[in-house]
Image (cartoon, rainbow, N blue to C red; front, side):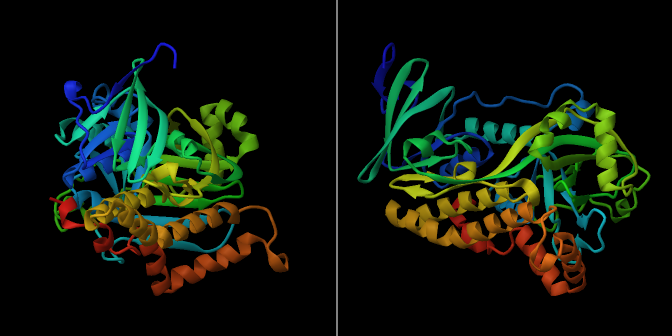
Amino acid sequence: MDGVRHRDAADTSDGLSVTDKSIIVVGAGLVGAAQALLFAKAGYSVIVVEKNTLRHETESGNQETQTISSRTVALSHRSWQLLSEAGLWPTIDCCAIQTVHVTEQGNFGSVKLDARKLDVEALGFVISNAGFESYLHRCLKSEANIHVIESASVVSVENDNQTAHVVIEQAGICSTLSVSLVVAADGTHSTVRQMLGIESKHRDYEQCAVLANVRTSKSLANSAFERFTRDGPLALLPLASVSEPSRVTGQVADQILSDLDQSRTDQSSQAQLYSMIYTAPSAQAAQLTEMPDQDFLAMVQRKFGGRLGRFENISKRYVADLALTVSMQQVKGRFVLIGNAARTLHPVAGQGMNLALRDVFELVSCVIDHENIDAALAGFEKQRKRDQWWVTSQTDLLARLFGDKPWPLGLPASVLTGCGFVLLDIFEPFKKSFAAANMGRHVPLSSVLRDSVTR
C-alpha cells in the first residue's frame, strides 16, 4: 500500500495495549458503543475502531429548535430494563410511552395497549438519537478499559485458529491488531462482513421512509400511534415537551416514573411534538422530498385524521429507502456481526434497535459464562436464534401485509386485518401476549443479563 506506514498495534506508546483478554468493537454507533461498554464493565480490555470522530456535547443552542429537529429512537421496556440494570440508561430527557393506539385508515377495528393494564412502568421510551449517542460516547471516553481509535478504517480481516486479526488504517499508518474476539457493529453495509465473505439476504420493499418531527395542536399525553395506510405504516412517537420533559435516569423501577402525574392523561388542549415515520412507495421519494411543508402536512393529516388536531409544524425531512438485509452468518471464526451488520429491519414495529440490544447483552453474557470463546459464540447463536427469527419474521410480514394486493379467497388484507384488530382488542390474553412480544418481554431478563455485567 503506497504511502502507508505499518506498525504493530501492540506497541503501547500511544496508550493502546493488546492482551489475551482484549476485544475489538468495530463501530461506535449506539449498538457498538453499548457493546464496548458492557464488555469493559465485565473486565475486558476493549479497543473501539470508529471511522468518524466521537460525538461531543450537543446540549447547546435553542432547546426548542433542537427538540423539533432531533431524530429519535424508540426503546422498549425490556431495553430500558437492560440498560438501567447495566448503568447505561442515559441521563437525558426522554418521553415515556404509556399507551399505543394501532389503527388502519378507512377500516374498522383498533388495538389499544395500556401500560397500566399490563402492569409495567411504560411500554417504552422515546429518546434523541444524538443525545443517546453523545451520552454513550462520554462513557466510552471515561471508561478505563476502553481505548478508542477514531477516524480509522478497517483495511483487512483474517481468522487464524483462535485469533482474529484486523488491520486498521489511521492517518496513513496501518496497524495490525490480533485479539480473541472481534465484534462488527459497522452498519447495514458492513465492511467487516464483506471482508469475511459472508453473504446476506436482501429484500427490497420498494418503500421509503420519511423521518421528521411534527407538532400537533392537540395531544394525548404519553401516547404513541401506529396507523396503517394504503401506502404503508405511519408512526407517531411522543417527544418530551420543551416546557415539561419526562426525565428518566435509570433509577430503581418503582421510582423511575413517580413524577408522571396521572392528571396529565387529559392534555388534549396542549400542543405536542411527535417523531414521525411515514412509509410510502419508493416511486414517491422525490415528490415527498420536494413537497412544500404545508402540502406534506396536509397529506399526513388526511391519512391520520383529526385525533391530534391540526398538524402545524414539521422539521427537516429525511428520506431513506427501506429493505430487509439479513446476514447468512452472524458468527464466523472469532468474528461476530451485531446490530444492522447482522440484520437491518423495516421500521414498522420499531424492533431493530431493541433486538440488537438483546443480542449485545446476550453476547457478553455468553462470553462471561464460557471460558472457551468458540463455545461462547456457539451458545450465543443458539440462544438468540428464536428471538431473531420471530422479530425478523414479524416485521417482514407487517411490512408486506398492508397494501393493495388481494389475499387468498379474494379478500383484501384490510378486511382480515380489521377483523384481527377487533379480536386482538377483545381477547386480553392475546393482547397481553402481543404487547409482551413488542416490549421484548418474551425474552426472560435473566437469560440476557448477568451480575458481572451490572456491577
